[in-house]
Image (cartoon, rainbow over all chains, first blue to last red; front, side, top):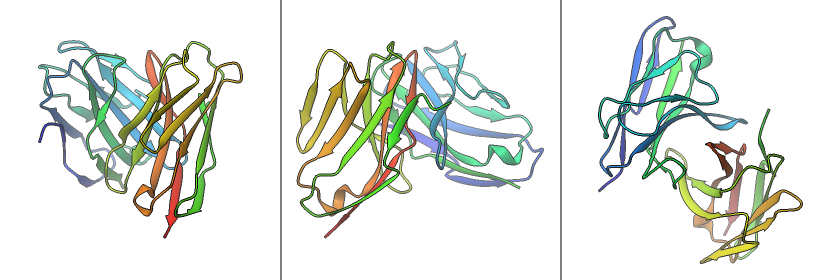
Length: 112
Length: 109
């Protein structure tokens, strides 16, 4: 079934460790996004990519980095995790920026 | 600051009732307003969307009402079913998608 695959589904991580969340889509969408979801705050955009080779900052980019080496993959890296990054992370894609976004099922990340 | 304000936080209705979820915004540059449905352990799924040149849009049992002058839009679910129990998010687009804080809907059989 076409869609977005995120890995891992959940992770517990010690503060200060480096972590990469993986996201792969097989819809050949140009645009991809990373959001974090926190209770009472909804979803907030971390970073986005309009097309392979380009990335941009969203609403809450600090402490996170992304890369977009090809169309299908859009990994999110936490260089040195902090407890405030405990959240559920969702990857999404759309055919083009501004189009309807399709979401993966998320990665639940706990930083201790 | 929350760009899209959503209410209520939670809602309980009987089967067959018509839950209404409301959202408000200030930024008049927003030009696309989607609603997402999210079940526990799953990602949000696009339910229905509207652009500001239309005052109402229906898809099946779901209707968006849009009031451009009041900068408000709402989701109505007709003949609600227990399977509609989920969290609903409104959102608005201007360069990025800004989400409301979500409404947890419970439909009692």
